[in-house]
Length: 238
Image 1 (cartoon, rainbow, N blue to C red):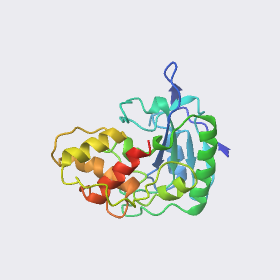
Image 2 (cartoon, rainbow, N blue to C red):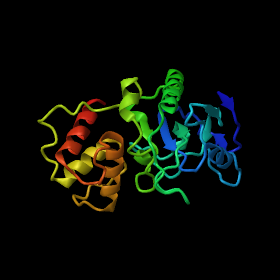
Image 3 (cartoon, rainbow, N blue to C red):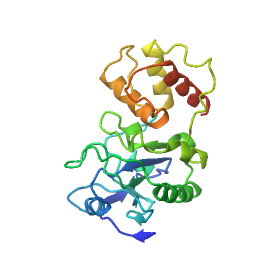
Image 4 (cartoon, rainbow, N blue to C red):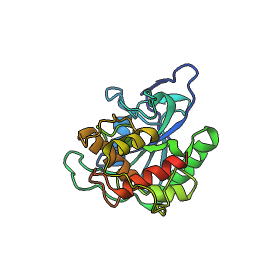
């Protein structure tokens, strides 16, 4: 691990304990550009760690400090996600970075292996439940889409890091046409969403974030039986 200290951090709230692990992509052309930004005092952003595509791990902020990676975000009623989480940035140009749109790409195995080992170490030091290992898009679905549909959440879950559905119960998801049922399940799982019974912009954004994480084959933000069945299964894994 390479020490690369960032000045962009502060103290966690008094008595706060780490309960979330939040994964991001950098959304920049190179890892060095991302490191420069995460260490720029004027940018006022940071993360605890950054992992290059070749698997190099950089330590930027001590785990007992609050890094500034999640921004305006929430999960299961928690609003200060930065104060309750550890943030990891994965080098990847992302969906829509300036000047290189369309370069979003799969995360190399070397990067995923390094993430696995880093995450296992973090989980050994902090009481983080599998359902609290999330993407930036999960906690900020109206603003963010990282790490996105090409990130291999299934692999991480197979290594004991996070949740992944089996999707093998045909009895689940029967009420998928009732948007209020879908919204309530999303809210109960942890997403910040209002139960309106209408497929509005917020619901579509939250559904898309959920699909990017748990059903990446179809991320249009539309309700369907498979999506609700996965939600109902995941709720049962709480």
